[in-house]
Length: 296
Image (cartoon, rainbow, N blue to C red):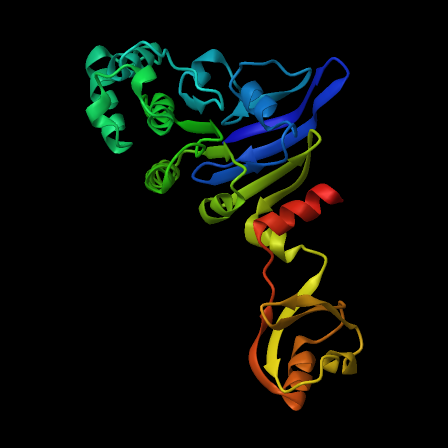
C-alpha cells in the first residue's frame, strides 16, 4: 500500500500542495484527477523521490519510502525522459539493469514488455525515429520493464490511439489483479471512470474528494431523477411538493427531489398524467462530480 501523508510543497509564494493525504491500496487502480496546476505532478514526483516535500512523508507498506523501495516502483513522467538516439531495446535493457535485473532477465523482460505494448518490431530503432504514439509506448515500457511492485503514471494515455489505450488498460488491470497498487493521472475522465476502482480529486493543492466512484456518487448532495413520458402537461411534477425541474435532457424531464420526497410518489403522479417511457435516478458522471468538487 502506498500512502501519501500530509504532503505540503511550496515554490516561492506558490502553494503546490497543501496537506495532501491519500492511500493507494494494493490491488486497486486509483485515478488522480484535477485541473492543470492542481498539484498532481508535484505529488507524484514526491512519491518517487524526485522532489522533497516541505512537510509530510510517503510510506510504502507501512514504512517510510527509501531508495531501495523506489527501485521496485514503476514511474512514467508526463514529459518523455528517454534517450532519443539510443535504440529501444538497448535502452530498456539498460534501464532494467539499473533496477537490479540481471543481463539475462533484463533482455527477457525487455522483449516481453515491448511485445506486450505492440512495439516489438522496433527494438533496433532509435527512439527519435518513432512516432509520438510509439514513443509513448516505449516510455510505458520503461516504467514496466522491471515488473514493478507499484505503478505511478503521469498522463500515461496521452498520445495513444484507441488500440494503445486498450493495451495499456489491460496491462494496468493485470498489475492490479496481481496485487500491485496502481495510480495514474489523466484528464480523460471517461477513461478514469471506466478503469479505476477509486478516484482522488485535487484542486489548488488540496484533496477535495476521494473514494470509490460509486461512493462519491452516493454522497452527492442533490437527488435527481430522469422521467420520460408522453401526453403530460409540462408542469405535471408541481403536484408533488419538494420537486423542482432541473432541466430537460433528451426529451426527458430531469427533476431534483428534496430529501424527504419518495421517488415512488413521483412515479405514481407521472403514471397518472401520461405514459411513462423511462424513470430512474440520474447517475452523475465523473466529469460532473469533478466539476461540482472543484467549484465548491
